[in-house]
Amino acid sequence: MIFIKNAQEIDGIRKSCQIVAEVLKLMSSLIKPGITTKMLDEAAEDYIRSRGGIPAFKGYSQAGSFNFPASICASVDNAVVHGIPDDVPLKEGQIISIDVGVQLNGFFGDAAKTFPVGKVSELKKKLMKVTEEALYRGIEKAKNGNRVSDISRAIQTYVESNGFSIVRELTGHGVGKYLHEDPSIPNYVVGGPSPKLREGMTIAIEPMVNAGTYRVKTLRDGWTIVTEDGQPSAHFEHTILITNNEPEILTA
Image (cartoon, rainbow, N blue to C red; front, side, top):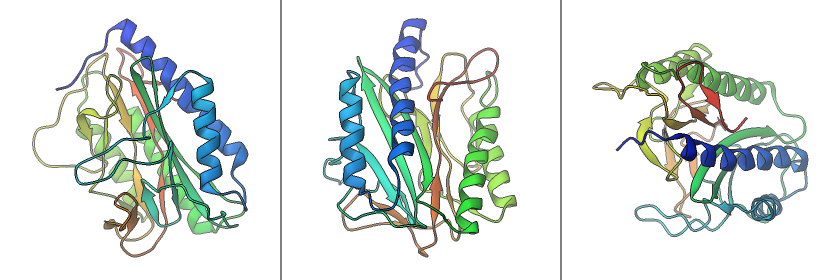
């Protein structure tokens, strides 16, 4: 079921998204060689709770998995998404994707960004740049009356024209009243009917782009999804509102 939000609900979602944006800004200031992802997680949780929010990922479960134990997902280098924070210090040259979800007064916001740890290789720089640009290419198509497939096509076309691959197994999603809602927002063109975008929909667009193969696998921890060939991966995400005009980025 696709929820069309009213003005009051949109206001609530906007407030939770603002906290998400603030947490990602905080992460940007903290990420450097030597810091651990567990330290980043603790800082994120402290900030979210200080703003009256609840870390939306902590305790989240999906079919066949145990509850996610942390407030952020911290995915390093070849980890695509759902990395579990730990005590391993970050190293110069790595990249790290931070995914943040916040619930505030019953409404959710969700966003992600990939950060460099110190100086990184030209390949990783390009991977991050292309992934972030792919996100904005997708957002440009998130207009009232367009279809989800318009977003998917814009992302896939841009990523593949730059020599990278799009993860198939994971998609964006509706978000707002729940952390994950319909519709699914694939980052590649899927055959068959595609939902039409309507004013009042709030969706998370989140291209996950690999330097090598698009294939991924899940580690034994039950959560961390990594590239099958060990090549690096990047992830950018915004929650946006479909309007009668240009899409509004709520997590900017």
